[in-house]
Length: 346
Image (tube, rainbow, N blue to C red; front, side, top):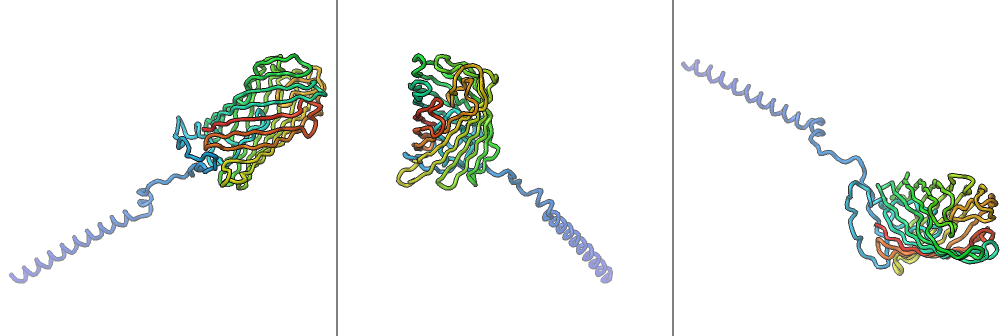
């Protein structure tokens, strides 16, 4: 009886021990599976591989204040918002139709231009222009641009005084590089100009395609921009082929005393590379229009502009330049020019 009890107790102890060991193995195996690298990776939360867009830079402005909105997403990312991280840059002022900046944004720009003609070519006189430009950011890299419209009052010495509507021009631009960390942008684009304006104010010229490339680079408070444009008439008889370029430099001189104020220096050039047959003239249309003059190939105009741009709020700025030819102007259509604008940016 005692031997049987002892044997039964020993057998029961072995069964319990075996069960405990199996449970321990299962527990350890389960723990091992739970802690395995593949399982841990599977259970770990996914992380975004695309870097976040750069935040808007805090650019000084005369009246300070916060932005009107925090770039809410409308329809899709980048629509209206455009390029971020370049808010410290100032837009060019002179030659507003063709000096397209490298920045992608949504804006409304109101422009007034007073352009005086030389006595030697057009008998003096002037043209006054009011216009509005619209730029619409479709994404953070792509924008629609409408750069020419408005109304002109022409009073040239050799032409009857008259007024009328300007031609329309519009197109697209795309930022190939938008490196906010290094304050660098490279943008390409094109515009098309229709011939819908009033002939009596020297509009209704050649229909024109103008591909361009623009670049922007910042060095602290110094901001540089450049643009190179080729103006190609649809008909080489009705228009001249023209090469146009612009350079811009601005500097925030005293951001603590005059926040948002930057003196501006710009240089622009127009070079006629072919003759047309539309008008028997020895002067071209500079950046006012493509006249298709018959005797201008090889000539051109280079003019300098000096002025300033002042950022009033995070969304608004005013700019003004006085422009004067430094080569070829008095043999073409430029005696001097004053350009003033107001920009509202989304």
